[in-house]
Length: 304
Ligand SMILES: [Zn+2]
Image 1: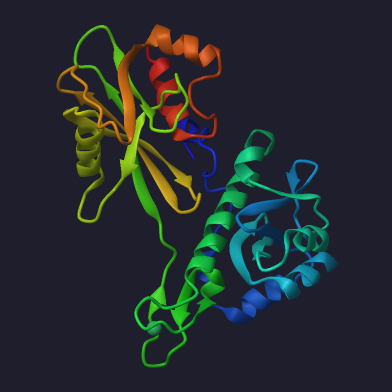
Image 2: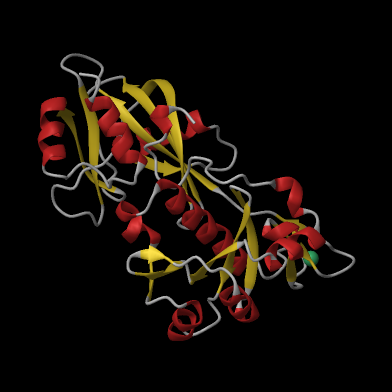
């Protein structure tokens, strides 16, 4: 991992995903029964937590949780121990909390400031993968039920003459720091519909079918802010499995300073100097700390 990538929450490649183990059901079963293995229990996209820390099940608690889990998936190996995630969404919240010895079910994004990066990444990974399983219980081609395979990284249609394979879906979005064409250095931030007064962020949008990432950057900036951009450069990406995102960060330069927001997704957009952004940063008003928006802005600030 490069130093400049380490600041982005929810990724980082902390777990060895050990993809070669997934295809072996006996090995998966043996690892699940291994007393050294760890199971992360989740309930409807939330961590089961106690004292602001997600619960990690080992030993006897594992068997109790697995007996009532809707789905159990293999996340990977952590320093020789297998790590699984179990979905307890079929239980009432109180039962899921009790069987895991937790005290509450809480969104990982609410805990992220208090978790180590490896733990935040594992929880987000578990959340995204288990969410996908709940949404893919039936085959989109024939309507028959599907069943998990490959350690929970694929589902297959159970109808013999169909057998369609379904893989976890990821929905990429571009997020862009647009710079002004001339001096002084400025970048374009926008207020999104529904955001409170004064809450500005970089511009973003989903990649559409048949587009490259760069195509999506140019289209989104033109549609949302009326800005033609050139010199589109990749900066970095962030796993955002809430529920299925991949945020791909770019820098681009506007052809002119003229801005015309669409009035639907964006209600306002304007240029900010570094001094203006530093003021906002000092007040803690410059992006969620776990977001690539924050990363793009702070990286730009550090340049001048
Ligand atoms: Zn099918």
